[in-house]
Image (cartoon, rainbow, N blue to C red; front, side, top):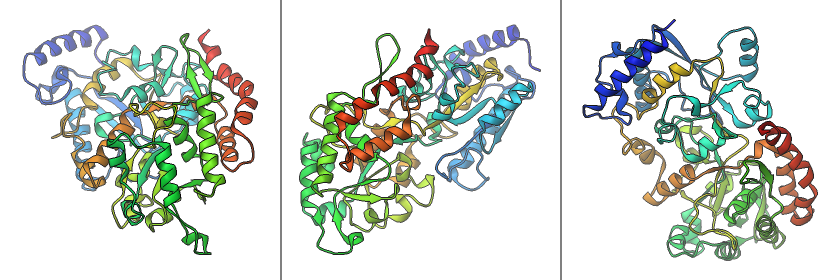
Length: 464
């Protein structure tokens, strides 16, 4: 189907030596687009990408021509790749693990790359049972930055190998991290509060400051609860609770020195975080916002802050997000630092249960991946490492500060290992604590044995 492995490797080595001797415009010098496309010939190999998007995002990996400037650049990269390597790129709409396994059993290649949800991959034991190949076993510079941040690589790690990447310089799929936090400058100003950006610059963006803002931005005089003003709401999904945990240095799961996962939600930092949230709710300083995407009060200037998944703040990710509903400016910030947290740490958002990243099925071709990926995933035509975010910045951010916070949220996000514990059960537990139905210390201790057992069965036992 393709030239022999020895021949291809010899050509690749000569190609690298030739390419390194000249100036190049893109990130990876081995694959200068000005070189002769016939120097590496994959003889028409069909390279399939099963490209599931998330959250109804409007930015697809198979955009219609002319739909956007960035979409056209992506299509041009596909054409350039096909010409350079003599391959055919087949971008499938949708990614289905069940279909992959069915076709695998029949000896059929489903895809070379699949965008799949982390929880589905690990809960289904696809990595554990050898259905995906490790990118760390391929002949690529995995830690060059081209394939994602340390957090995205860790999100697909198992043992000492790495099974996932993202197209970092494409910016898609958008990092599906949580929680992100936004503030409404109009509400902040109307209640004579200092901008969180300024507070953070002064080293004063802390839980204590947020608590004072909750006290100041608090108008329940209207009998219609929908018209009452609060700084912050808790909702039917625990974005606020996770924000408090992460900002206080707490983690539900921690990898120990032996590489095994330990349940650590019953730590003093985690109990302190949940006690803080519960105390705000008990004092009626924050309200029950109900629906998980509780955007309406925020855009109607009845909330100072809003927490959700990162993509809710980006215009390319659907017509229900802030960019379409907000008439005025909205600004990005991260959750303030807790008493046990590190004020210098930006790790306050996580790749988690619902995040989606690229995986390589075991019956795809590692040699082809090693040849194509360093070129395919470079910044798109006309863009560089320094300019690839320019359009993203112009289209989504009202200030330089907000763009910088988005970058921190995205690039410093860590993997929380929640796919290996009963995630829905944990979310319900956090919600019950906020509503005062049970204490944090009692709740976290009561599930310790169950959650550690889950970590052992889905992760630790496979390391032995």
